[in-house]
Length: 164
Image (cartoon, rainbow, N blue to C red; front, top):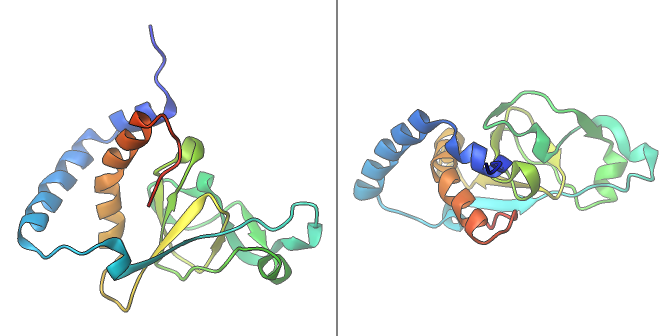
């Protein structure tokens, strides 16, 4: 008896949701013009301040890690960083409404929508709509719709890194 990986278990979840999203987006994709993601959104990942500098952590800036992503709105996170930690790392602040997606590891493909401005570590990619061309909630549900496809590709490539 084989044991399913976490990614395979996630692929089996939410069958009804995926079916509903497939119906909605299939129809939209047949009638609406399509654009590449970089035409309508900016994508970037965050960074991790040095853990050896205690002054970089515990500040006022929420800091999103891939474990905070639960395919829903992000209303709280476990950790925070200081302004000093932000300035001395590749971390950057993403605006409220940004869609975030886990790039690798056990949570690869998980998504969320920030309900507050926050920074993230390098395992999280922020997808921020440009100039109100796209609603964050639409983008979130579209990425959820494509989640199974992205996970299937990662599994076929025997990889846990998600290319956005």
